[in-house]
Length: 394
Image (spheres, one colour):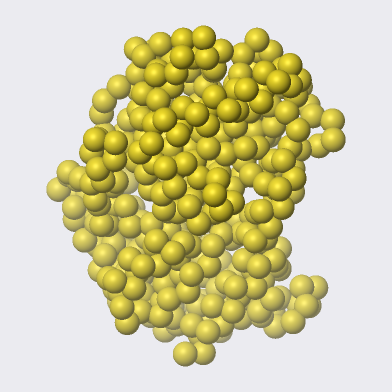
């Protein structure tokens, strides 16, 4: 069926999530892209019946958030499913992510599929890396969060099928939901959004020509290992360390208490600027285009947008060989997660290249840009379309 044919010929899908998320967050961006694909008619056989989500507004009370999440919204979703089905306008329900699994109703007239991005909070673990214990997911959830997580796991068991994005998540799905129909479909990435123009816009004022600038994107969640990165940077030769400057885009505070990344960097005499969080795509691109490399030492990712986005921008990536970015990097280009010497050598090599260019602007790497073509939106649309059709016909 062609893209320009009437949407009424397509089967219709209800797209469900909880509270509205920023399109600049990981889950929010994935949901936004999927919604846009459905609304634009990019799916060959499917169209969007409706979106079920809610906006709590500014500074809602904890009670209001819980009431909406556990009771009001699940009831609303169930009612919309019933109404749309009665009108003949619903063939499938797609739940956005595992954090909304509680929205899967106990009895549903159409199949319900959920996209599982990761199991960090549902199946928390502790990793031992470089002599440090890295917490992945909430190790000590509050009683309310424990109850919430139980609801999520029960919801996952009610799903008629699961779609996931990486081999690591696929393995966990097969282990914990062995009889559940499963598709592994990596995200689509519109690489054109990151391609640098022939004439680059002016760089951010913080990127002075006197220093070699690196980019860090992501939160200060322990699994992101910003503390490890700062430890590595602190051990660089003094002359090299004084020449290297890190620019961090993302949350600076640790969600489970502890020092902020900026404070820890200052304590270790590492030049570190916290740019902020919720940064728009254009500003992010300016940092991708004008910094020397992305530093991404994360211990665990559901997918890992920052490395593929930087590669799409032609920016070199220094990332640890851990799930899931080990699936996304060019073979042989990842760094051992615990080898400080390898990280130091890689950072020094980038610095040497910058010095040899005599501080002239870096050119985008065409090999990196070509590598991310396997994540093309067309491939994603085709795979998702076929998965939804299979779920409906089985």
